[in-house]
Image (cartoon, rainbow, N blue to C red; front, side, top):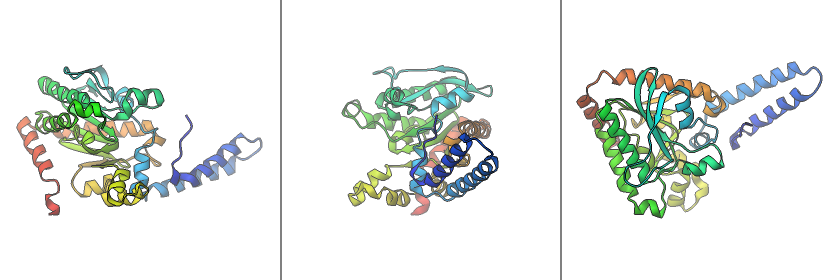
Length: 314
């Protein structure tokens, strides 16, 4: 699949196009190609070392970033998918099941956006409905019953805001999922792998350890939505992104997340296999940190962590 370049990557795109043209031409262009490849690599590294919040927002939304299903297929063995909330129906925007990571049993769940038009429609672009969050509560209850850790992947623009979702109790379903996450008596790890949008994200992110990929974002509202409310101008999304402190680096400093997982040069979408491997290693290390703790200690520390967010800023 051809790489989709972002707006701020135009210079990189031009260099890569030159490399592609020279590679196709007959004759001796090896040295020129080699020099251009090195130049492209250095420019990419420099560019990604100083991304602003709006550029990181674009990277977080890149369609080729690894999705939940890819993580499952790569390092979760003996995976058994589970479906339905036992109240209304199933929701393909939020998937999950039981499996093993390096021989250790886990309950793993996450938002799935889809990769193409057909799968994006099937998964509703990763925007879960009430039955999705009630399914998440069911997953967490199962994890407690079988005494296995919970791993959640967050990648959503937000919970689905449609009329039917509101009629079926979207806010209540999110609240119950948050509450269950705070009180679940097993180790709980969350990874924000792309977008972490509003209550739809935090509903499955009230974890003992919350990690973010280096160029992912986590916020109460999208930059576009914030700009529309504050300034009545959605075109000021770049200003809003900067003001909202939505990057992993800002959120780590504010104590809202616990760890940052470094991405390959040029973002996770340029080397999915490398990114997935790094996430697997980070999950295993975090499980090792948590699995020696008792259930009461886990719940007490988790609730205290979230209740204390923001108090140091007062």
